Image (tube, rainbow, N blue to C red):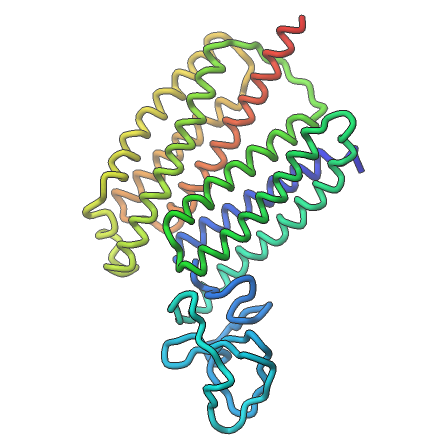
Length: 344
């Protein structure tokens, strides 16, 4: 299985990115509370599709933990039991972690699919960890990083639960995104270290410094972006989902910092691209960096000036995470080239 390890690492990386994409879609559609409990959804492994499934029924069997909505509150079955002809409050206890008691089948299934992707990627990371021990004698860092990825995914799952329990607390959402980027970086390192492909690059110290600066700026921009997104979420709650023109009518300072900071990001990466071209360094992924930054700018402009066209929020955050990944891989390639140059 060792010969397939690199492929498994790449598949795991793709699955983690699918989780990020699904998570971004959850945020865009406001489906974060589509499943008010965790890890089940309204107490079911497969969530309901109709509101009638969450209404109390006479002579109906309920398993412990199943949820119904009564008078705009969530009620949880204490034990396995069959209802009589009259609702008996003693069989139920209120769900106390939050007071969100709304069923929207669209939101519920968007959130549920997001959780399925998370479970699938979690399984992939465990498989990766098991096979990684074949590298223990030669490259101990590979199994150690694989273990970190598994623990990181576990932390993400736990944090996802606390995000739901806290009704989408802003700080926890930002932490969720930052941890996702760290997991991506760990997987990219594993992919790079176990790759057998040989590429011809030329090392340049200033280019390397610009790479490090660019990825730091990207990370800061992503964190600032989550802060702006949290502000937008609050505005949606206040003015409604249909009043998109009002979401950024009176933005906070975070928005202006995020927007202005993008100019610095753009200029640093233009310098990076110019040096790559001028010195013919061979790092062709820099072209992808510039394309992604251009698309980021376009999607950002579309959100602000055209009142959040459908999909632009998801595109904006997904492009940012892909940009981060490519920049990190470029650093790995440049560092490998530096070490090779020193050994000559």
